[in-house]
Amino acid sequence: MGRTRRLHDVWRLLSLPLLAFLTLPLIALVLYVPPAQLIAYLGDPRVRQALGLSLTTTLIATVLSVILGTPVAGLLSQRQFRFGKVIDTLITLPTVLPPSAAGLALLIAFGRKGLLGGWLDAVGIRLAFTPAAVMLAQIFVASAFYIKAATIGFASIDEDMKHAARLDGAGGWQVFRYVIVPGAWVALVSGAVMTWARALGEFGATIIFAGNYPGTTQTMPLAIYIGFELDLDVALTLSVILITLSFLSLIVVRTILPQGQDTEGQ
Image 1 (spheres, rainbow, N blue to C red):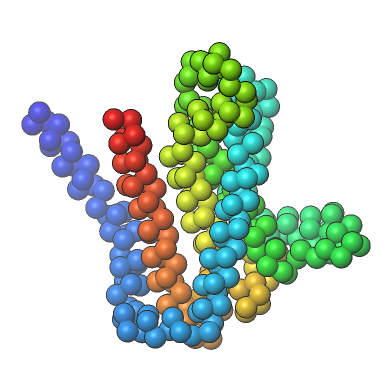
Image 2 (tube, rainbow, N blue to C red; image 1 turned 120 degrees about the vertical axis):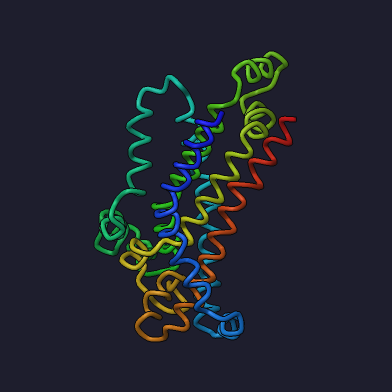
């Protein structure tokens, strides 16, 4: 017992340098912006536009990621699916691509002279450098977080429960709605929250594919980028807001949702 305690103390001591390095910049940023300044700049049109656009686009992108990603997660959760590793790799790839490469890939695919952009432009649909491009960039880089979590949640459902439901006469949709979703709801919600948080911080793919137009495509990360050159106070205010929202979303995933799962299990 004493040896285990000493080992625990050693690990705690060795963890301090990296933990301090990760925490210090965040604390410094929050302390640098007085609450009065933060409140005052919330009324700035640039801040409100960037905040409103970010919240709107990330919400829509998250909903679309859930709708479109759920079937993919259901497919990947099948243990004997032949091409599961290939599809899983394709889904994960955008999360590790350099942001500039992701933005260029979207532009070459959906830009006016891109692979599909020419056909879309012919029928009057323009995606690049519009709010739709912002959402497509967010889905491209963030949907994997939901799909991964949902896949784990779906795969964790006991096969006997699904089999019993089928024996009782439940169809495929009923099994999904009344057995799979209730059993995997924590994974689904946590995946959706993580997708939203990742989309909220998306920058590189967005600035290349959607541009940086105030009131149209300028999300909070893009406003921070331009604000660093033009108005540091705006950039600082948006940074604090972004950190706060991201922190709260992680708190939901790390604390509230696991507690909900434990409570339900009890």
